[in-house]
Image (cartoon, rainbow, N blue to C red):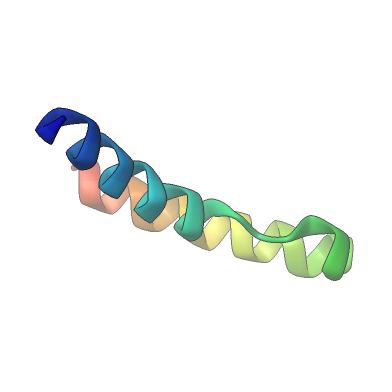
Length: 46
C-alpha cells in the first residue's frame, strides 16, 4: 500500500505538470508551454 501511495503521489505531480489542457489554448501557446515543460524536465534529469 505504501508503494501505491508513493506512485500515486509522483504520478499526480507529473500529470499536473504536463497536463496543458490542450482544448483550452491555441496551438502556439500550447507549443510554448510544452517546450518550457520539456526544458524544465530535462534540467531536472541532468
